[in-house]
Image (cartoon, rainbow, N blue to C red):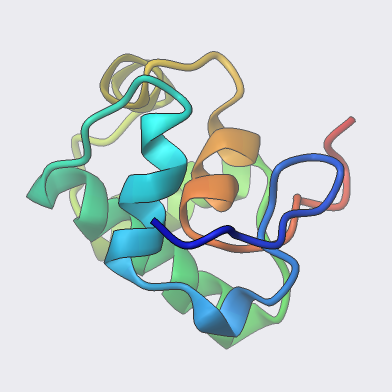
Amino acid sequence: MVALQLDQDGHLIDYQIWTPDIARQIALGLDLELEPWHFEILFALRNFYSEYGYAPATRPLIKYLIKTVNAEISNQLLMEKFKTGLVARHLTRLAGLPKPPNCL
């Protein structure tokens, strides 16, 4: 396991080094086992970041995922599958992206 350079909030300092293996390593610390469904969400989130240049807050993230991944996605489903109440913050961490600007 490689020692990751993380900021004070647990996000990768260099989002460009992200790989699925790095996501799995971060997920271990969050007591989460990532499956193909999770990676579909994480790759979509990385696409959002590439397209718009920032990590989205929860509401725009869910709207984007509904349009690009699956119309059945909801905040509740993401909270359940990713074992968190802080959807945008948690998912951006796993996707190797910076913390969304409006997250505390």
